[in-house]
Image (cartoon, rainbow, N blue to C red; front, side, top):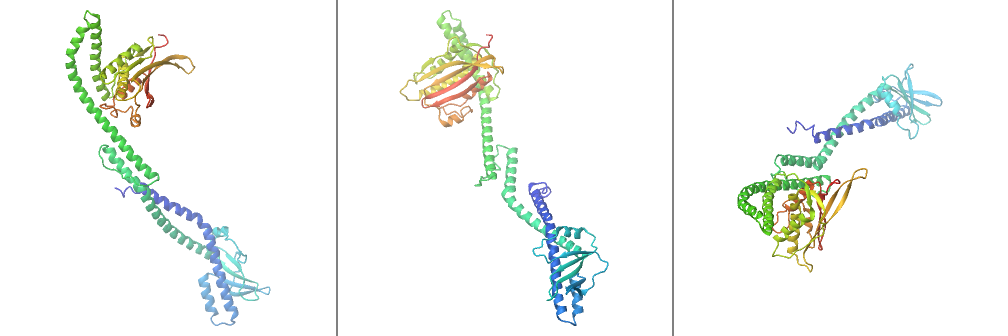
Length: 480
């Protein structure tokens, strides 16, 4: 399977592209290289003709001149060699065709550059005609040496040179491609293949601790990718573990909720009777007990809904904010009775009203108050533990600047020891609470309830001097 799709993979594409790019570079360089070869080829014929002229003219009636001339013509494709001496052209070898078409090439110019145009014409031409190559003579007293070379011989030499260059370029391209392929395969392709395999294994079973990639010391992008992949897997596994814990919590709360309703039945009967008592003080205590029992049942149901990610939608109604905060704070402070004396300061105006679900709003502030009371109960300070709330309206305007409503920002202030840095990082994540015996669900639930109302819950400040949380809830509509 791997070899079947090799050319579709990154490795195969890399090898093919490398070969193509090297061949393209060789093609671009071939034309000037061919021009250099043509000039060198002609220069070699000129040098051979100079030596032949010196041998033939220096030894008159040399017996081997005929054999030497024939060997020279066969080896060099030169059909005639002539020299100009004392204004006369003297034939050294062969005869130039009388009816031939000649093109003059002067090799006597110092630093002469290769003629690319002449090379292209020779390569793509039909090979007819001759070159009259002019060069410096080798015999003393002569003015010039000329050789006659057929264009067909030049074309054949260029074609043979082209074939050699193509073969050599292909070998170079393949060799270079293999080297680059091996280098990049080791540096990039193989790490990416390992990452892809680990990703496939992780996708098939995220909870299976297989396909783990040991992080390397690489400082490049591959090393960063490996480390980011490891961090991603850790985060996802943590989320899955948290999801399992929520599912387990949901099952446990479902059982508790079922049994708790039966346990609270008798308490409801007694509280109902107390709520109808003729004595006003007992009746008020009975009514409060009824609300407490109902909230206990609703709290179990709400916790079950949270584990199912299905919180009930708010049922807003007009609430007197100061009274609701006082009731929530009273229950939170009463739960800590015996451990510390908490001062309660309520600076919320008694006439201030909000539109919110009473039970959900109670839960928001009861969680905040309980956390604050718990933090202050275990804190030693010269100042008396104080739980303080205030509120202020914030006008909401439309795009035209017209007021369309307002929110209420309620601040919950304590003078406890403040939140640790680790707790601040995971403040609203479930099951990450740092409080002793806490589950970490309180702030998470409170924030979800506040956002369900269209508001929010956020941490404003925390330090050794205390902590301030801000709750945003919708105020009364303008027409109210």
